[in-house]
Picture 1: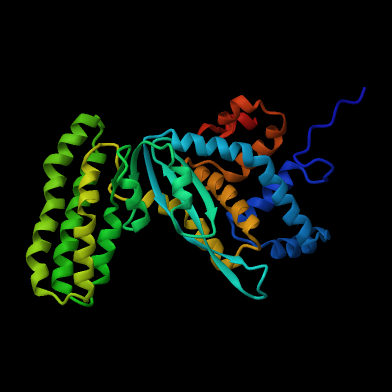
Picture 2: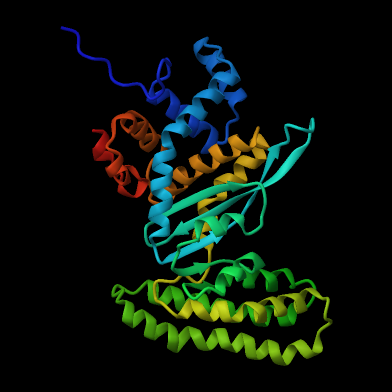
Length: 347
């Protein structure tokens, strides 16, 4: 008897999960454009595939992954603490030759679940956060982009600021007013030194952490505000240092909110780390070929970004998922998310 062949990820395709995983990781993690991969396959194996074939394979994989992507979305929204950012991505404009469209990848990170979601939109308006956050309740950590303020007026969402963005404003003002900028940066340094102090302690009791923050860090956050209110009278309104001061004052209620819950981070650094591959990828393949390709990029970066946060090998994860997902129980898809993955599953 001849046993049944294993189900291939893409029906009527020669591509097995291992090959598809290699192509996707090479493109989205190692930042190798498809045409370069094709050149390498031809050089090393004498196999010449077309770029359209590779593109169709990636698109088919994203169609397969879409139910898991929706599961990821629901998992993140079920959290009560989300970090958000919206990095740009250039998309080829099909209506204008040699012209690109400025799109955005709206990124949401759940520190509690160790998962990240990227969602492509053509614009940077309220449409995406309105859709994603429609039924969300909890903390939303973000920078000073005004779109988020519209969600902060809702009783169910509490806005939390990003200390790193405030820090950067003063760093950018070093050439303009080094003495004042260094004074503020010194206090920021003390804030982060205190935060490291509590994180390095073996006892991570949340009550103790909260008490420590209220006693040691909250006064420093307020100290910057008090200093700015005094010093802002002596700086030029349009100077870099004035802009840094204004940003801090405008964001103060959000920065102060980082002290409301011991689970909250002081900044959005972890979400920025998770989307760094997107920035690196932009330098190599410059733009997405279409709006559909941009959303495919969002799907793949959601999973590979989550792999990175959970220290999961993205090649092992995507190969395993592509082998399993066509026959997997839709009610148990959460089991396939990167935060639930272990190498033992592929043994």
